Length: 216
Image (cartoon, rainbow, N blue to C red; front, side, top):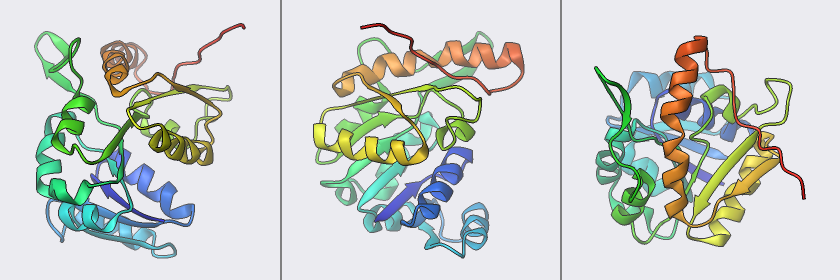
């Protein structure tokens, strides 16, 4: 499958690497075609079908897209990638609307709207699925890293798109996948981030995740 990954940060690199290792043809998009981080990633994955290009070219190339940038840049990146290139495609959104300031970590959108919903509104013909935003990058593609089963959440308006994304999550090693419903449920997923950031600050590491224990 052809997949465009928009973002060259830790999350983008981690997901792009795993997707390429799984046999997909992956293009990593960035603001410029000569982005060093993207170029180094492509060279490191020359054994797979990996390459790098601009946001627009990656979005045009991918049959499925992964949006993995800082939340405050997400809509700008979608604009740079051109909304028409998202038409009909499944878009995995891993972004979080985090805002850092003197008062600590806050969300720049919450309660009545989510960043995912804003992204969906900017690409109305795409099928946005929120997932993987509640774990650190290493756990995204190695959920058994901590030695116990973890839970991953997802939300989206298109049932077939969520099934498609769930197949990739299972290939990453996720077994406990909870579908929270429509994309409005991404609000609750994003609201978990301030607590996660606080825990990471307290423990000085990000190696933890949710495990939902239920009966019946």
